[in-house]
Image 1 (cartoon, rainbow, N blue to C red):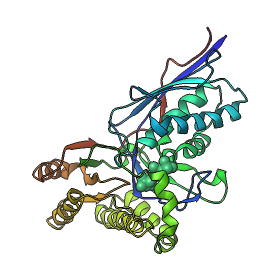
Image 2 (image 1 turned 90 degrees about the horizontal axis):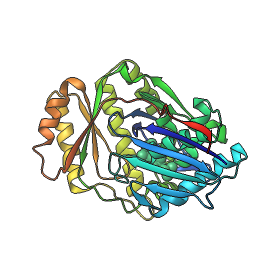
Image 3 (image 1 turned 180 degrees about the vertical axis):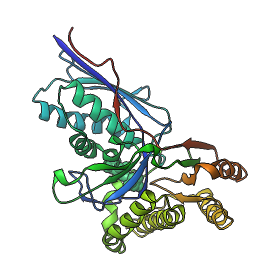
Image 4 (image 1 turned 90 degrees about the vertical axis):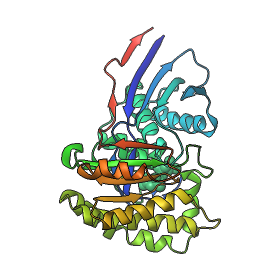
Length: 332
Ligand code: DP6
């Protein structure tokens, strides 16, 4: 009986222009386009083995079998791949991340990018990067961007094929550093998937979505021209806009903790004092401090003097998803 296996490694990404809300929740088509930097150092490694002897999928995430809702989401994603390959075989999946899940460090992005690459390879599907990005998006919107390294744009539209990512510039284009100030390590109470559904209940979501092309263009130009001041202004505005939508939805979502606000205020002061640094925060309380490589040592030093920071993770721009060399489609 054939056993087909593949392993893939992917990194999360931090969105400079964020998406919030789904245009089509079933297809996970984002309400607006987005732009991110893939993060080196942090990664998820996932092995998928399709095995004729299995009577159900066996899923192990970070050492624990069937971790809550995550396992259902993985099975749904494998179902998509089984439909594409026309092979109904169940699989065993082992996925390991080297950073905390569910705390605003896009663990679902690296998880579904790695799962999509490993499972499609094990199933014998030969997908190009665009097709892989579309597939990854069905598992988690932000995962579409983690297929690529460096600086990445995610487009959206009305059709499944409209929602795919593309590299804007490679990882070595600009040595920015993301210093992630971790202020909470526990899993967030409201995940992004639930949060996206609340977005349309905010009276300011429509204006945020309508203004996306402007923000995306300014951010894109700032990256291509390596203009830190322009990047800082638009990245902070975009993050504040998304959190304003979250806070004004019904029921409201407040991801920021007192420590998050304290770091935001320090970061804007440090920038006024001459350091190249700005903040951005995803669906969690941890603060991503984006800085130039030159100023990152001083920013990290300053961060260490603020109370309530549990950990600081340091990430340069990273690579896109990669398959391991020892993948096989061998008879057992
Ligand atoms: C705030 O990709 O986590 O990080 O599709 O439900 O997994 P799901 O959503 P997810 O949403 C990302 C939200 C964000 C902004 C962003 O990364 O663009």
